[in-house]
Image 1 (tube, helix red, strand yellow):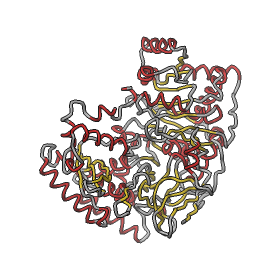
Image 2 (image 1 turned 90 degrees about the vertical axis):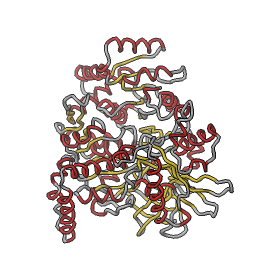
Image 3 (image 1 turned 45 degrees about the horizontal axis):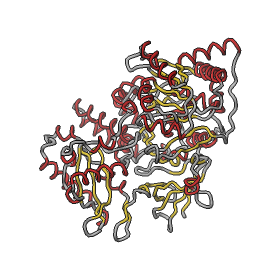
Image 4 (image 1 turned 135 degrees about the vertical axis):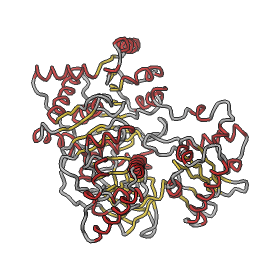
Length: 631
């Protein structure tokens, strides 16, 4: 076993509950902005100060107390919004356990999770009301339904929704009404003090990615989440009163801990973006110091920057600027913010850190942002670890690595010799309390001496820099006994411009040998822009053959891709864009069975054309990736 320990580069802020990091800012900077948002992309920006945030939190505490909701489990589902953030913070500052839910799940799965989480109060965007009630059953534990962002609903709709609930012997409240009543009660009866939570008490119940049956329910404590925030503040030198732009869904622990709560712990301001189509506008108007994202976000930003440079005819000037900047940095003179000020102005002018998670970023994308003065820090983590395990400092970027253990974190590689890959193990206060009501999973999750088993495979370089190889569950074992991690091959395939995504897997041929096979999702728009339409299959196959040959040339022979087929339809993924491999494989196998085809029949094929032959497409039969509104 090879062990690496995190180092504290900066002072420990030493807090163990959200109250301990929020309340000092209420006193020290009451008029500083805490949260900025729009009700709609067309409305004016609303700024909430720390004084106003404190007022609204106390109002919710007061009204919940009047209603007898203290200690009840509160679920939250909806788009990123001030209501979402306020509801979450109210729970974790002493009201009880919070259960954030994925707004993109089908309503049937949401109802399953409400049952598993024993949610008693549900705060939800009113746009989801009808879909939830179409599938609601008597076993749904929710007693009190709180419709948020109801200003978009007409009075008749509100009355209809209230009748829905009355017929089910449940109560309907409107969030804005509760907040206003709470404010009045505070004015009439005095200031409410926040109760001090027990640091080791459960703080949040988070469901991991997957179907409602497969998802694990993770219990995080106040201490584990706060330890993770502290570990980041002890590792990365964030600017005081940090300004962030919230892009990823808040139910996901990566955005919740890194982008949302860490910003508030620093006394900073969180701005909520209006959607992907508005990201350029939001960057300019909110001028963030930091954004937390996934590879898709940073890839898109890079493409837009380069596209704008090409359209303006400034490519030669840009290439010269890159060489000049690199030359000056070599001699210790860093002028990136001045040389690339026009490009940086398109990013808001202040952006200096991006934090990438959920999936590895292409090192070339990392290098591009570094060249223009933005440190794209790669991290690694999982919900069970609150979630960030490793990260990088601006001063110590190593492209391709997911960094080293954060402060307060010990990491081990279960290997025979240093430098060899093995399962990644973690021991730290950031590790979850337990899987909720799943003793078998809890027993399996830890080694006898207390290390948490991540299920991921990686190796250390120079004794501390972690590189990921893949998931142990997705590992492909060949007939020779050699192991292949599909993520490694997918990263090589996805680096090509025409490839939107890919999935590599092993399937057996008629001799029983495992054949490494790739499903490649092509970018229709880019191909058509180059004169290669979907109907031009000969040209597409020629390009794909050359691409596979080039990729294979970079790999040991046993890792070579031996078969492929392609599609223009997106893979089935989680809301954080991780491939749902089991569902994707089931979809393909159902198609083969329906058409009486073998795996070899797929080689070089456009699988979309096969799906079109079925009267009922496979994705419809499997339910696809329907949003909540579709039920």
